[in-house]
Amino acid sequence: MSQRMLEGKVAVVTGAGGGIGREIALMMALHGAKIVINDLGVSVTGDGGSATPAEQTKGIIEQRGGEAVINTNSVSTWNSARGIIETAMDAFGRVDIVVNNAGILRDVIFHKMTEDDWNAVINVHLSGSFYVSRAAAEHFRKQESGAFVHMSSTSGLIGNFGQANYSAAKLGITALSKSIALDMKRYNVRSNCIAPFAWSRMTGSIPAETPEQKARVEKIKQMTPDKNAPMAVFLASDAAKDVTGQVFATRNNEIFLMSSPRPIRSVHRGEGWTPESIAEHGIHSLKGAFMPLDRSGEVFTWDPI
Ligand code: NAD
Image 1 (tube, protein in one colour):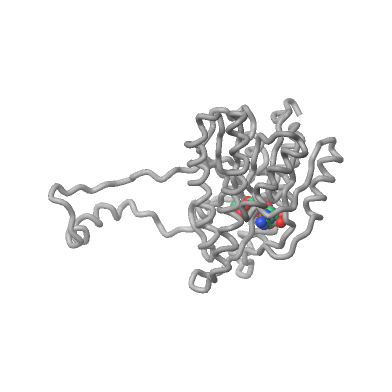
Image 2: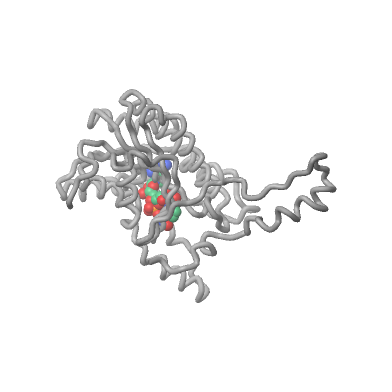
């Protein structure tokens, strides 16, 4: 390694007991960061709980000469999230980086989605990202530095079937990140999102019954979770000092900058609009620029490179 980009920094990585979070924690440790490995050790749907995944990540970091502690709190309540940041303060005396990566899935077609399916996913992804960020923000403000990296998803940025809860949370996280970037710029605090792609246990639930679905899953399998780690390490480092409020996507060897909503077409009528005039004229002018009802896989149509 030519350069250790996170020397002297302390990073909290939520959901670091497996998948993408583990790979981010491992690479951050290789780059000199001391790591708080947070993981509840739950199933993809958020059931159960075990310290083993977090302990395994810790074992790998220590084997490679790094320093790490574990924390098995849930990100999904105000108090337990504060406990995660307290672990960083108790163990290492500071916190410089927060990676909001912990996540669960409760995929179900919208008209069958229960209140519990909705709340469980929103609590972990959207509220969890808020709680952990909010707890760290007090320290970031005092020390006038800090970097947030939040995991979004093209399911939210673009769309997907059966993921109303997850998509809402993941698009919400981009607004949370931009708001943090705006509010905390004066304290030299940065906040960015990554929409990762990876073959992990989360994508293991993608149906592979038809030949087309099977072919798609084979493509996704090439994208190992570690491919998302370099961008997270970069965004957490001082080398990204001018990068904030952005949404990136990482997909095998590709990095994308994702667009942000802007007005794309307008119609104006001097005397104002009525529902009738919108139906007769206005909507026809806007229709040419309508957002298609597409899904992530229909936008990323080429094989992962
Ligand atoms: P994963 O299931 O392998 O890892 C998620 C980890 O989060 C698990 O170890 C789990 O125990 C932990 N976790 C769940 N609830 C928690 C809670 N309340 N508190 C603390 N830890 C908790 O998933 P992954 O595929 O590595 O995904 C990581 C992140 O990337 C998630 O936010 C996911 O939504 C996002 N993402 C993944 C993909 C992909 O292709 N895998 C695509 C888009 C976005």
